[in-house]
Length: 376
Image (cartoon, rainbow, N blue to C red; front, top):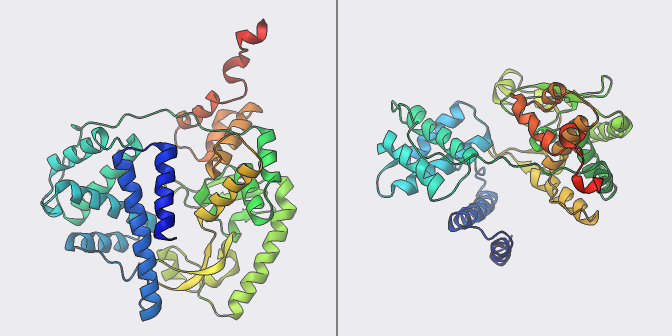
């Protein structure tokens, strides 16, 4: 990534999406963060200082307290990055005032500003509320009351993008190798992107034809179906993983990442076969927290790239992402007569109302209604 490429990317996004000033600034901040990370990684490589996790403890006293609290509670790395991002947006909103002085009215004003000026969605506003409350209540020890009196972002009901069965087949035909197998499993089991990437060897049960999702959305476990036509392919893939695991052990590499509590209880569990990533990366990567160079799972951007590339080669007329495969899984099940409660359980939805959105994009919504044009 160079400065010239970054500028071309911003110009392309501006022409294609016509974003507002707030969205443009958010993209610029993201690119600046990426360049800072690259700079820190290069510096770490020259000085031997571990990257990001140990080195990046915050720029201000309040941010250092936030980082300490987040890590003591073992919250996910992405949660830490998200909460720190929202905390800095609150700091910019307060201007010269210190973050520690923020009160309930400041929080209400900040949330209203997000909805009215920055035009964020309801989900982003809720995320901001959680992050700011964590900062002020859990880190700064403030007693906060009700936040009911603020302008709420308008929730939007978006109809999901769904591929037909024929479009799914064309997409898979345009892909090959491990990315194709990953896409087929994502569609065949209805997995979210992170759920797919974080599968361990022990989670793919070829004998019982099941995929066990550990710590899915809401930190919930669930069991979903494993397509029978993938059994042989997955078995062959698993044998390749055995050889890769054997080479890693010969090289005495650190074990794969494990949740902190498990790693403390069984320090060597990360070296065990059953805990290996089912979709490991080809290259070793630096752990963002510990600085250890170990094998990680395939990055989300990598798989997203392969899906987009496959969609272009298949000449699909829809914007295809990995999550579209999950939408297609649910819609096709409903179209073939699976009851909605079963689909809800397979998807891991807490409320059936979330699953009902797929009834709006079925091939024949409602009770098989035909367009009046088809009757002429």
